[in-house]
Length: 273
Image (cartoon, rainbow, N blue to C red):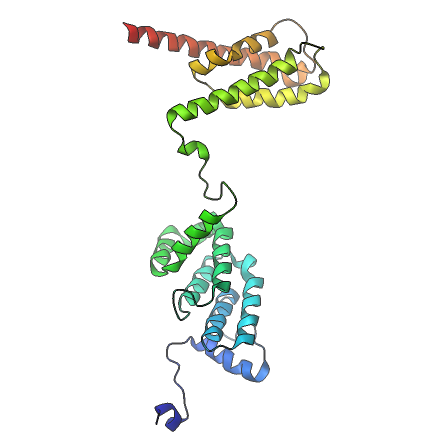
């Protein structure tokens, strides 16, 4: 006969003691408290432990309660390093590994992504690295979740970072040419006079050009952007110039572009020599 049947006792050595006590009490009360008496366990960690035990012994109603309570505390705890580590380790104890039921694990991954940099700072890089090594499913699932994301910048990798130098130069050239075209339409319209209501938009376009800083001489030459700026600085009045300082800003950009072109000319002459 089995030892358990003789002693009328089952020893659950592999299971979390707190979670087992909650499960036993649940059989009588059909509920459990978010935080057991005299416990330092966070609500998030507690619900994760209860979930794993309920999943192992197929106590489906308790498992459902733990899942919903875990979900309830998730957003409030996603930047709490202690609670997140505790909950993650509790899930890692779930049998069979790597994942017996993905519901809570999926929520856990969302919490890690939601906590983001604040969570990393709260935990500390050393402890976070240790956790990623200890919990094998966490880095793998995080990576898959991020790669599947519908947000193009979810990995915080800009498409420009993946371009060759020639491709990056061509992209900048197209952007500056587009700005040149829009500035020309606003400041030098062919069929009508300059419209005052267009000036806020021109302020934005000129600001975008300024954000490119010291653009390459080849782009300055191929887009003829200097011609547009030179026209803006001429004596003809421009609506809202006192507010947006179009002439002054255009003159400053022209000065930058002229120096860049002169510098490029010296480099070319030096190479030729």
